[in-house]
Length: 97
Image (tube, rainbow, N blue to C red; front, side, top):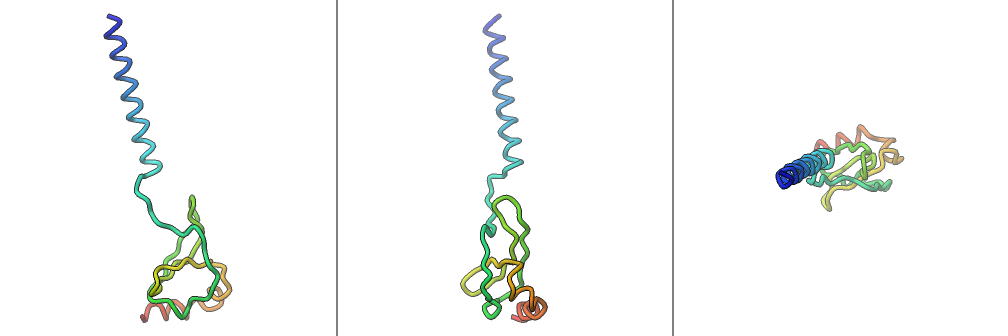
């Protein structure tokens, strides 16, 4: 009788561990999404090759404007002086190329 109780107890323990690990995967997915962990305030307006994206701060990601360039994506500080002075011109330029 005690072997049956021990077996059932171990089975329940394994089930609880499986449920706990699957709940953790929902909270912290194993798929990694790239994000900007740092930003630049350099003026890259002449290098922009497409439409920009906006990233909100969450976890290791910081607030950023993401611009595509020939060299790849560049993360820019949304408070950068050059970005706050002429955003409509930059967006039009990005949409035309």
